[in-house]
Length: 361
Image (cartoon, rainbow, N blue to C red):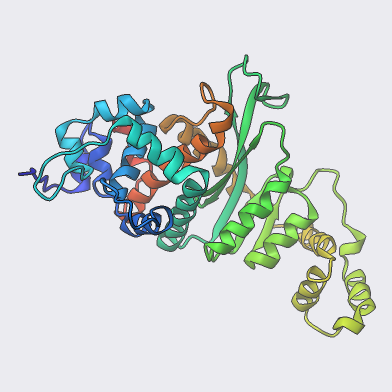
């Protein structure tokens, strides 16, 4: 018979050293597992042998311990296998082979499956935390100096790829992966669309000057009904096209298709956005930020990004060293959602102290 471990998660967290499997024992992802089963095990003639939630938890262990597939499976003790639910109805422990875990991650799920899990976890975090402010920033995924496939970024002075991460408060909910020289600004719309799909209810979305495009201001306002708190250059000036008289001019110019200068400013901006004037909407929104004395205090919240990125890199392997070029996006996303799921464990269990998994092994 399989032994049971009747202890609380606080018991493990308050000890000097505990297994990450003891922490993950209290992570509930059955709904996510069922979605993966429906989406990626559609062939009814194929029977999976291991619990999907157990397999997901096992790749979290792999990312957390920063081991290979082989060493991850070999590192599990009998107690850890039980905590991850690798046993059958008769209590017999059955661990997957390293090849099975590799197949599950790279071929059964792949980039699409990993991205979908990221969305599901992000949506769960949003619902559980109900935080009203979001922020986005990019961080380098460093490569070896000899890597011929990675771009050299002169700002960071290293070869690298980039991870663009959106956080709700200090909780990471979404990430995109690009090459090391890719601009930040074009990535924001992907994050806006992801938050919209997650039904995010936020008031603010902040970003640095890398995302300063007028269309980004407009996209945040239109799709998320949130205020864009995006830094502007020191030499920025009030945009003439973003002033009310120019807003009215263009609304009136399109009166034949429904433009109404007597409508509310929100209605006018929405009308312009929907009729190929998104950049002008963004100019209006940035003008409002430049005139608002409270803007800088709101923008300061974006400062939480870099410490959180540093913590992700301390906890999981969040770089592209020794990773094949064609697999870099997959494994960057994998490390990200491994961290996400550790954070979700804290949120589900009501932890007020964050990063409680730092002492686990």
